[in-house]
Image 1 (cartoon, rainbow, N blue to C red):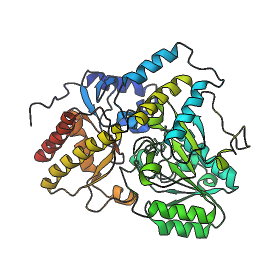
Image 2: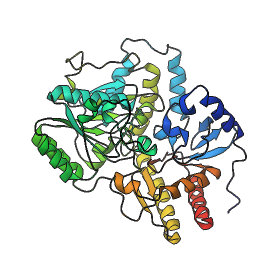
Image 3: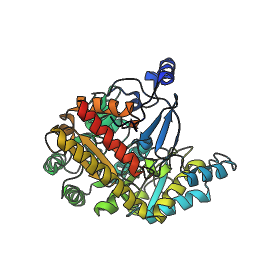
Length: 436
Ligand SMILES: *Cc1c(COP(=O)(O)O)cnc(C)c1O
């Protein structure tokens, strides 16, 4: 192995912290995918991060491919965001009354996101999706909705049916605590299967409020919509009066300034955001056409609220991040080039190994599936050699490269990554397959 690859020395502190954490926090973590359950081993506790690198409690340095699961698209501790937070925090951390900053944030989102007349801020992607679904139901007066197997829309009850990544990692497809009544209104179809959707719509004529989808999926690894799929759904929604919801929590402000709607040139009726929109602070949003959004309280009677929604510190972080992305379109070109470099490098290495693999990518979303067949839905992702992924994950981690700890996650590329970082990632991958 090339000696330029730094190997973490000890992770004793992380191990101790994990043991201590388990005494007070369920499973030692505040969100299940952090627990390394899918890949095995002890999760690393982080101390700090800057740019493309994270440092754990033992002082080991990692090239970061999680980037807080997406928000850190410009790298960690991005200075303009940090400085804006520092400046704003002096004015108090919350008011519970409106601020000019919220108006500026809404205007900025509207100027970037296509088809958004009105936008409501919330504090997470879960809240955004949950609220968008409630709105679609309130607007249409219908109860059922369609989601796709392997798509994740946060942990609200209605969505925890065949919900991808975290849930799939733990091998649970139905979740205790969710009533049969709730899940009966959740209809599911395989991703990329238009016929299955047509069938559901026919069988439930006039009863479906919404179709919600990750326009590019990131919660069963990265999976792209086949040509015509999203367009076909658009047509069904138009014909049947169904609200078409794009869950852009992962794709929003990542695939383009205007997210998947812009990148794929398709209009949704409602859009949900999270992750990048908060610049690392807890932020989500949902928005869309005025005709639908005006049904939200206090304008309409679909209730939705939040004590800390539009929180000034969260808003200034998100605003600064989005403004940077809007004013510097070259960031998207650079992200594209960096991810392509990684893609081509991994491709060249994997081709030589004879191991079956598929690399799915669009823009700065990418994942490697050790699969013999094209990965176009959850079933394909689940039948890949995910045990091999787990070994690969640990080898990379041991060599200072932090990939998402599950084969069911997209990798999140940040613009802080250097060519050297990417080359190192490729060369460690090569080393893994040479000793395999
Ligand atoms: C992460 C994610 C969510 C949930 O967002 P949280 O902020 O974790 O609640 C919803 N939808 C998609 C597509 C996501 O990737």
